[in-house]
Image 1 (tube, one colour):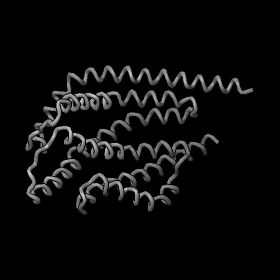
Image 2 (cartoon, rainbow, N blue to C red):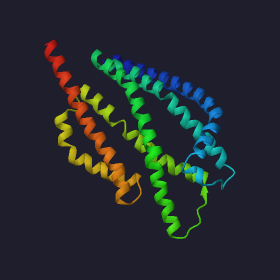
Image 3 (tube, rainbow, N blue to C red):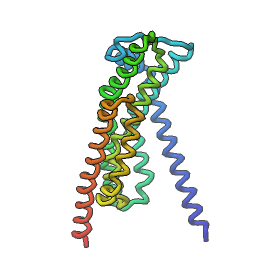
Image 4 (spheres, one colour):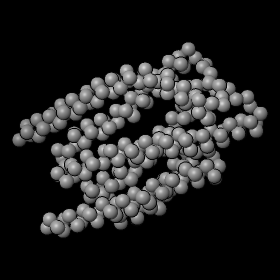
Length: 246
């Protein structure tokens, strides 16, 4: 009696394996392209503030190769992201209704756009603000500022990655509302807890002073409130479609 379920499970594993291999192949191709474009990306980052006013140092023979590969990998992930999202949708669509399949597919480009907006916001606003705060502390304490390129990029990635992912919140909320997992009433009820989480998040990824916290916290709150408004729109349309079809 369990053979069909076992075969179905094995079939899903086989399909998952195939899609992971496809993603890895595309990621590898993008990585190869990234190896050629990584020097241009590094030169661009070095030519813009705040990096333009500092000297990047290497403290290990591996630092240069590490940063070179990290930038190439970051480039390949961003370029491959639409294909990754498509493969995720193609894998889960069999468990969704036709309307849900269309909704999931429609959200893919918006997820990419939201990620890019978050990437720009975090790099051009949050990261310079955070670095300026840390360098001001070093100057006030009389420390000599000598930055290692590896530490510089580790600090940068620790800020821009969480903020960029946070900008996916409205898309995730819309999708979960479409599936019936979330609704505006539930999101309103969770607002107090959500704000607490956002305060903690803002304090972790911004310098430890009130202005920086607010500059990160306010956009996160706006993202949550936008998510609630979009959830209301999706929820209303979903009910209208159900009423019309019924």
